Length: 452
Length: 55
Image 1: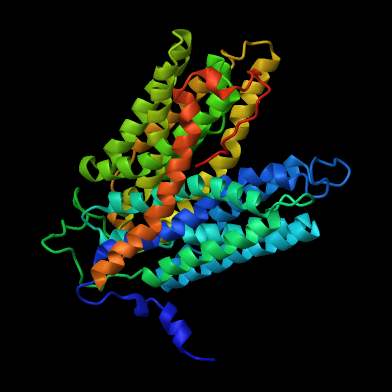
Image 2: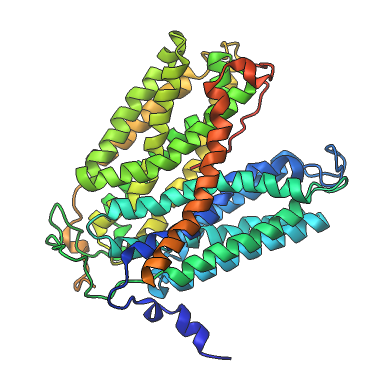
């Protein structure tokens, strides 16, 4: 076997030569993130997957049920968090190119296996393919470019990671319509076209992800942006002294940020997960208008990732999270009032800002970690923090669904059934605010003796 | 050469993102037009969310 391949994938092979433009790295990161972001468009496959044997209608005796299909997505999300946490150190050691190629291999082969599972009607293979193997690809791809971007943009770390994580949000906007378009192309009288769509998506996504892997570079050890002077390590404006991943999660700062992310995600899901239905119940609009509202929120979710994380470079991370939580809680409290005065425009404006800050919370967290723990193993630390997202993404929507369903069942009018949920969201955000305000610089005893 | 690569790389990522954004804008249009444009009858509590949970 030739030794060329491992060399090409090694960290050493990705060190940029003199004159390399750092603006080539964000598209490499976005290429990977916008592909793996497809996972949030997975719901477009739910209904077609439930009538694979019935062809035109669900056959309850033989077809998969929606709850069974829902597990595909849940397994993928859990594996995303677990793989990011478990493989974080390997990611830092191996460099971004090897990790991106591994991510592409897992994600795309997961799609292929799922396609075979759909063809053979083996649900276990879809769980294994899309859920387990694809989920590992998601976790690796999510954290692969994080520390690399922050090393290339020490002057604007929030903006740099914001671009990649905006790509993840954008991936959802691409994945859903792409899936629908491909299924429409491949479907026949007896086949909804899901398997062929999975195969086609695997091919398309492989091209983009491998392009990202080919393009990505890490900066030389002594590289810094032209004209930029690093602030003293540990100073307010600069990154912290390096803290290893194993040491980081023994610090209170790590767990405070874990709470910050968990509360931010749980609260945002309160609106996102029920956006369409909430708009219909509160304002008596049609399903199409409700769907339009959900579509608009997706745009603000994506835009907020770039906008707010860029703002954090100017305000500092602690300040921007204080804005997310304080303004978010205030706006959540205003939502029932917008319904009371019957202002749909105000409702849309308020929820759009809430969702932009929810996206911003995701995108700003890597830079917050860099401020506290340095860039040494920030990707691996970020990987462990993502477990907060996995938990919130599973628990959050169930909590919201349970409360609003219980209220409706108790006879509370649909328009008022959301009020207690919204006030609960305010409470979660205030918990996040307290955790954020408690964050202090990491004690020097946690610092590595020799910062890399 | 590097400038060409820079332009190509950004086009390769911005083109699909723009397509996704355009589709999403298109999808959100009923929100800004009159309800009658949607044509779908209102069934409070019986509709299903059309957007997945999207962290």
